[in-house]
Structures are given as C-alpha cells and as structure tokens.
Length: 386
Image: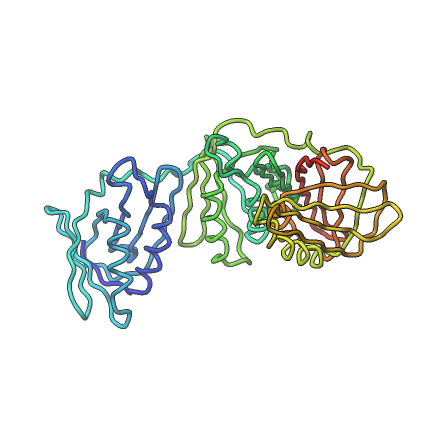
C-alpha cells in the first residue's frame, strides 16, 4: 500500500472511527483501525469495530498501490494528530513486516501493524427491512429518550433505547426502572420516490445500545438534513448509511418491557407551570439537594396557585422556592430526585408543561402543553417520612 493524503482529513477520519474501537479489546486486532486503499476509486477506507459498534468512513487519497493493514488506533491517531496540516502525508506499508511508514514534511514515523485479514468483517445487512429515515427526526428520537436509559450492565436490555416503527411513525422509549421517557413522532420515514411502492412498513421493535446510539447521533449531526438516512435491519443487526459513512450496531437481545402499562389511565392532580422558571428553581435548590440525597419536595394547597419546592440537606442547610402554577386537584406533597427531573425537563421543547399525579407513591408524568411534540416523561416519586 502506498498513498498520499491530507493530514486534516486523515486525522478527522481516525477520530471518527476510533470511537468504535474497544478500550478493552477481546483480541489484539480489535484495538486497531483497518486502513484499506483502493487505487481504482481513489479512496482510503478506515474502519473501527468492537464487535458491537462499527464505524466506517472514506477519504480521498492519491493512491499508487492498493492494499490494507490494521494499525493501533490510539498510537496512530495521536501521531497523525500532532503532524503538520500544511502538507500532504505519505503512507507506505510493507506486506512482509506489517509496518507502516508515515512521512510528513517534518519527519518520518514507523508503526507496527497487524494483518488486515485478522480484522473482523463489518456486518452488512443483505436482506431484511430497508427504510429511509428523516435525520432530524431520528436525532430527536435519540436525544429525547437516551438520557433515561440505565447505566447498570446487570439490566442489559434497559441500557438501550427501544425503537418501534409502525407505518410512517416512530416511538422511542427508554427507562432505567426509576423513570421512563417516551417520544412519538409521525412521518419519520421518508416518502418513497417510486409511486408504485409503499413507504409504510409493518410494525416492528428493536432495542439499540445507548453507547452506540450516542455515536449515531454524532453521525446524524454531520449529515445533510435534506437527505434521508438509509436504515437497514436484519437478524439483530442494524446499519446506518450516508454518503461516505457506515455505522453498524448489534441490537440488544430480548423483549423490551411493556412500559405502556406503567402509565396511569387518569390523574386526580394536574399542575401547569412555566418550564424555564421551574428548571431555574430546581437548579438553584439542587445546590443544596446535591449535598445530601438529591431529594426535593413539591407541594401545593388546593386553595392556592403557588407551587412550593423545598429541600432539607441534613446538617448542611435547607432551601425553599416557589412559582406560580395552575392547579386542579387536592392538596398534596410529592418528592423526587432533582436530577431525574432536570434531565427530562431539559429535553422538553415547550414553554408550558404539566405535572400529572395521583398520590405521593404512584408514578408522576411530565408532559408539554400546546406543543406539536408528543413527549411523555414518567418519574417514580421518592417515598418520604413526615
């Protein structure tokens, strides 16, 4: 393999694919990135793959000889990032020694690699379901629910986000057992250009790891929003494809919990208030709440339209906030983890929101008012002793 390429483009590509390289690889080659040069296409393809998440991208290069090799992702990436970007890089590999020589205007570096044949093939979907998605809608589905997924590997299925496609719509949901975020979107699937084909699909669900979806969201932020994202799924493998990038994800196995049964059918207490004012009050009172157990209490009297927020950090101090609220129901008090509230409130895109609940020990639901977005955020309250 022998080629010349831009330092800036190579560095960006390495930073991208290295996000799919395992920190604790089960095999030495999985700590590497795969470089494959094709003199016919004039492209240098780079791939990172940890057996669960795979990222592949291509850059233009002046290629004299085609070839492929794998190089240590961290070491090679750090070397390239430090090289000057005002002149091309020359990259040559020796098939016998599996060593790459990298030359810039300031010097030459040699890095020992491994055989490309030892690198696992990136799984691509040949059959199964193929759809085109609106990148902005998919990004919204990820951002609005990802935060509620679990970080506990013992609850593996809950460490992902459940995506349910039905007709032209998408329902995204995530829960860690203490909270639940659900976003319903219409017309996520792009209309087919073929008038004789149907864009809508039969209902199906898949749960994708949150770690991988974070990379998908970064990928979506770089995409042309006017062009659809190609999405393929088959046998638990999902592939996202844009012009020069491919992301492949292995889905989590198992049936996601039936979260809809957690939502109460009706509520006896409903508060309506300004979202930004509520967030500001929570952030101020969280300074004290964070010192103890993150618990804040919300209370309101049936004869008043003032919501009170309090916290009591034992042996440290206490805090009190109040803000106007429209209220229907009986006087009540309920307690929450303030961090759970802030996480959910910050993804709601509405000035007015409502808090619906029945009792201090039953699920409470936050949702937007007068919004085109169908978002539901359920939070389990914390039981408190008077």
